[in-house]
Length: 174
Image 1 (cartoon, rainbow, N blue to C red):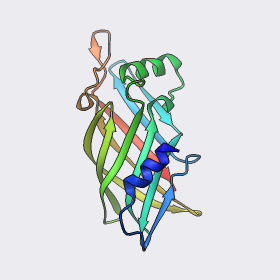
Image 2: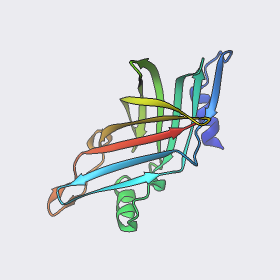
Image 3: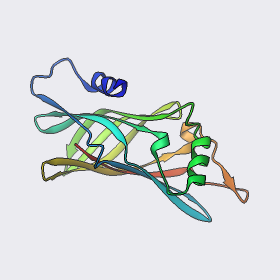
C-alpha cells in the first residue's frame, strides 16, 4: 500500500480537472532484461509490477513504475540468487522509474525520466509505442542500461566480465 501511495504522490500534480489516473495491470504487464557474456546470454522477467499512469486528454502525461529486484526470474535459481547478490537486492530492493517528460512525435512516444537502481538515480530516454487493445492500453518499448553507471561490479566467468549493457524490454498494460 505504501508503494501505491508513493506513486500517487509521485505523479499527481496540483490540478486534476481533465486528468485520469490508471493503475498498471500487474496481471498483464511484464519487464524483461537480457544480459550477455561471451559464453552465453540469459534473460529474466518480472510479472509483478506496480505503477500508475496519468492520462491527460487520453494521452499519457506521466508514469511511475516500481519493480522489485527479487521478482525477476530467469528459470535458473542459481543465476537468480547470484544476480540478487551482485545487485545487493537486500540493500536496494526496488527499481523505480518516474517520468519527467512525455511527448508524442510521428507515432512514437518519447519518455524521459529518472530510474533509480542500486541506489543510483540516472536520467534515461526511452522510445515507446502506445497500442490500444480491447479495453486496455499497452505501452511497449526497450532501452539499455549500463551496469557500471549504477555502480554494479560486474561478475566474471573465465576471467572475463559480463557485458556492461543490459537490454530492458517492457510491455506495460493499464
